[in-house]
Image (tube, rainbow, N blue to C red):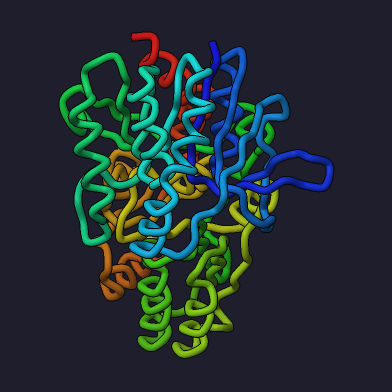
Length: 376
């Protein structure tokens, strides 16, 4: 089988000709590579950045020009150059037996449309929050409506999430992960430990508005102002457009001594930071199925997350594999951090539950869910 992936993911080529990307994309491409005989990846060419991972060595990578601008400006830029993108994407899709489009995203959506026009089977995977929220854009709505219209036919439609009720008729939930079986086996976290002194928290992910990190910084400041002791420290792992404003906010809130911005990390660096933490905090305003939740649980870290997307299914009830708070509420998050760090918990049992949950949701299991959906 020949698989073609059409994605807006930014990738770059090293001096030896190997293509790289970041986040969970390279690992997911490795997993999909196990399902096909030949693989072509159509991506957006960009500059190198820290924390990169290589794409499958034997995959054929087709770079597209990187769109300029953001939001509406970007959409208009892509629309004005639609003939270029449609022509380049169609040339690759025609030679495929199956096309994969990770959504939402303008380039990926064009890949979905082109695949339908040239009558190629396509499986689309919606990676954002399926439920509308304050971060939902018009493009998100158009994409979900297109997937609803296509669901139940010859093209599998999937969305990241969790729950007994599917996102829409004919659309399946699927989890999201960057973990491999080998990584689970290689990492041996200390399960029987309690809390460090002072406690150590970590937040991992893209530094952009939807991740809600200002809420976490304000919660840290509130704990300091009320005299909570010992004050926890926080590592913010990741990079993105809001890094400089977030560092400025930490200084403004007089939290610089408590917060360290670690930047974009590779898997080894991220695992090292997670292994040194006690609790993972994710104050996102919106999520589908956050891969960082599982990264943390693989290192036996409970997760304090906002109740968005699949968080309830992943975290479970209070104290099962972590705790949930409403999004966008610094006072509620500060109160939750206080409870987590002061109330009695069976930390070894809690860490074991986290570890067992993550071990059941690896890329190998993810690829099997994809295979099953496509085979059906």
